[in-house]
Image (cartoon, rainbow, N blue to C red; front, side, top):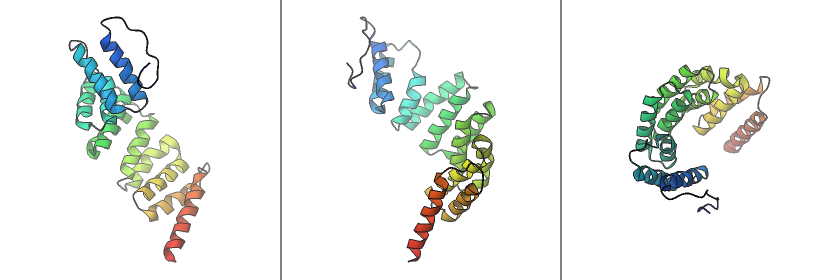
Length: 201
């Protein structure tokens, strides 16, 4: 049994690298990023002539908050697979988490160029620029991806997150006026109204 209580397959002598990779995958699956990184790095060191574990370590390092190392791994992967839209989206998300918003936006846009139908890339890009209060730009990306009502609802949520109550009211009201508005839209409108009444008192 592993540390997480997950049965691991029987390994033959000399399979230490594979065993560490399997254990690392289990750690990553359960969000134990530091442990996953350590195991992946150990696996690499056991067989340094074998290919690097960049595909596994790039997201694991990001999960552990080791962004410079993660970005370095992602750059190597991108160099090998420059037309992989999902990889570009994941790299952009790590750039965003690291605080490099300019590079993140550029990479999200590249992911959408590679795959214009990528909802993940569209939503991530829209949320990134909405947090900068560039709501019109965000709408132009979100509406084709998730529809107008959901787009305005999500911008309302982001506006609350950044403390922009005026814009939150506007986007929730717009969402509520459209067919297919999320049920939570009215709840947000009521919560904002209640909060404003409390503030006035």
